[in-house]
Length: 635
Ligand code: ADP
Image (cartoon, rainbow, N blue to C red; front, side, top):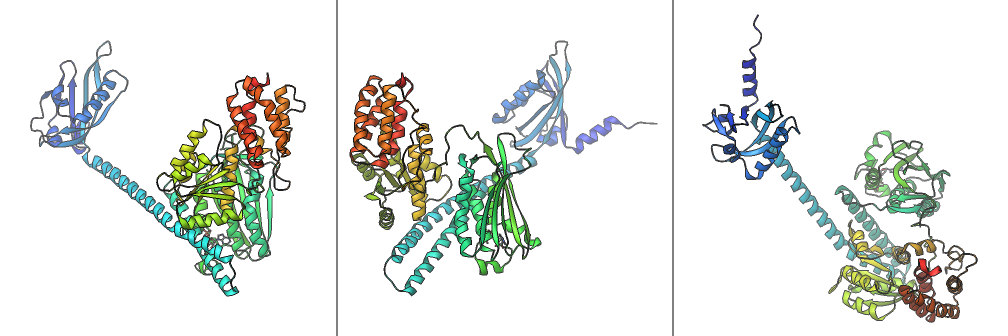
């Protein structure tokens, strides 16, 4: 019996695969190219010995080094198989993409390679496909970027006039008019606001799609966060006669780390839907750690949030579609309830980005339960300052002296009115340069800075102020006002040294929130004061007072410590003379210890005390304390 003719089989396989074999005698540097090379590179001269250098000279200059390295790896025995993709000049003079594979078949006693055999094949089709893929991806990325830019611009163009409409309309609503007129204006307001919400949704959605969404990673107090997230919807629910319950599991830690703003967006969306689609009964929101924490590790926590309602419910067959963009369970929904069908799609994408998921259980006529899981980081509740432990609500804004940098006349009018209603005192600069000039001359408690201004942008003006402030250690709270609502704007503002951010159209609520945020961040620019601010008791009378015990030990021993404690008491009591006297006595001590920054700050405190600017004093005190208590000061 004859076995198969192996030679013939191999020849057949080689032909069928379009392989062109070669054999390299390393000692002589001669390479035998088999006749198949004629087909591969259209080289009539194949089927003979070539010199290795001759061959290398035909490889594309950009590829030849790579080939040499791959070969060397095999010759030296680092790798068992040679494999390289490169371009070789064909007999027709053009470049052909080829893949070479080979192995060493013979070594001498020292392991020096003597002989290598292998094959080459034509991979131009594969390369073309790869290149087409790269080009296509590039084109897609370009077009996506263009789309993103278009969205950013459109949003800018839409927000500016929308700002004017909403703002001027609010002003008009305060003037005398008959009921019908008032009604019209309310309709204008709600239409403009829903237009704005739609705009926000579309922007958010496209940002997520473009992978441009950045998440914050800050500590927040879970219970307080939950109350703040649920409260606005509870009001709306109560108006409909619905009960709202919030359950937070005891075993949930006090503090978690994540993006409270985005988390609020998720809960807010679910709550808004629950209120919208429920006519009687109630809504419950519950927060607890997931029983399944196996996959997240000890530093993370999988948090479950559930929003349950007794509303109209969702038919089984619609339950998965509602998480897709622009889908509503029922086409008549839009007519009856409004909405865009984007809310849940955004939620689903957000929770996915937070390492979790969203699901719904629902029965038509009985109600729905939306369940969300997200992965957040855990921290030791007792370690370090907290980012969100303050209730900012009561922080007084009345009496603040504000520098408003805004070049648009309509916006200026709106902001003036809004700030006026908060009881703030406003000076207006019309471009960045004027803003800088006014900042140098006046003493402001806070600046509102439009980012797009003639002469000097808000970014640049802020950067300038921050640089100058380095000398004094002062820190002007700056809120960025921007019509750009795209991702990255917030980061850009913060990177420029601004403390908070509010995008136009600006509502009074957003503005006060941002101003409070800025005051808080500004006070917290150094870590210590943040801790102290966290202890600020703001419950009484709208004014906040600094508690003594945490900062000053019960019985301060050194003279400096005693004086500092006295200063704190004086500040807490708004006792101007007490403050000035304490500072007067502290000065020589600070001087003796070379605490220059503390001295400069003492000057600011004196100024504030003379002007009776208590809010300013309270914010500057922690900074001063930190500087005055530098390690050597207690000795
Ligand atoms: P929309 O802006 O239309 O509310 P969503 O994505 O938030 O968009 O919701 C999509 C659809 O899912 C809604 O139109 C509604 O049909 C359904 N839906 C969402 N939440 C509920 C709920 N709590 N009860 C009943 N139906 C709901």
